[in-house]
Amino acid sequence: MKIGAGVVGGLVVGAAAVYVGKPSTTSTTTVTSTQSGTPSVSTITTTLPGSTVTSTSTETSTVGSTVTSTGTGSTSTVTSTVTSTATGTATSPQNALLTLSTTESSLVEAMAEALIPTDSNGAGAKEAGVLYFIDHQLAADYGKSANMYTRGPFVQPGLTGPITVQGITYTGGSMFTIPTAGTAYQYGMLLRDFWRYGLQAFETYCNGAYGGNFEKLSSANQVKALTDLYNNVPTAFNKIAPADFFGEVFFMTWSGFLMDPLYSGNQGMVGWLLTGFNGTNQGNFYGEGMTTKQLMVASKPTRLKPASLAQFQQASGP
Image 1 (cartoon, rainbow, N blue to C red):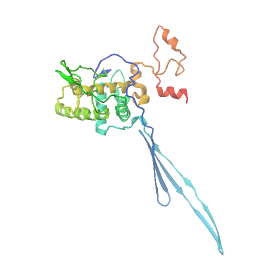
Image 2 (tube, rainbow, N blue to C red; image 1 turned 45 degrees about the vertical axis):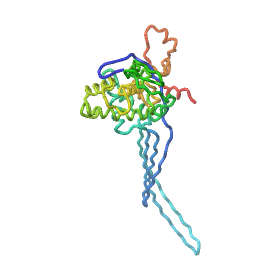
Image 3 (tube, rainbow, N blue to C red; image 1 turned 180 degrees about the horizontal axis):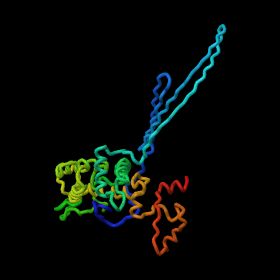
């Protein structure tokens, strides 16, 4: 994974499937019509999670009538013509914020960009839509801490000195953990709140230590601020350990860059294109005419164009 101008960690193809929840598919349709004689204008706005489609229709009616009256009877002839035009705009459901506020989303995107920047190697976290992956996961099971044990005891890792847990005293303190180790999260709060507290505290720290919001800092100071976060430098961090928050941001940025596009990240499969991962393409998804066995025994590796899980499901049919 790229951090600043360097590379750390090993190459991981594919992506972790931890905490992943599918985005909502609920839709709401609102119809507003305004009429004033002729013509009439109707505006229909359809809003889906992450999708807004607006169409405007203009109708012009011409009515002519001839009335012939004889005694108590009458006949009426009415002719009318209607013309209509429609225009519309739409945004992808992947690019809609479901949980994060405007301020929070700006900070999350800036942190993700600092961890995986766009450079000569290829597209980074912004192009991959990591922001939307994180936001959508916070709105789903991940943000609700689903399938996680949350009844304690809650002992933050890295504490020194004797610690007593359920009547047992550990003289050496608690174990130090590293990002993505999977044991750093020891809190009795939902991950959605964990992120909210962490973002607020980190922005406050950046203003105090570096004179401005993280997203406004220079690239060098952004790297320094993230390094401070990893090293637990901030002393007042709003109920959570700074390094624990860094670990979660690091893990979710990595996941959003390499996860299947089905989950709103890795848009355009830029993460897979960078790492050479082929996704669900096993040799013939795009008609390459190769078998899995041929690829396995070939003397030279073949780089396949990646295919996503959503594409595979569509190709497989119902």
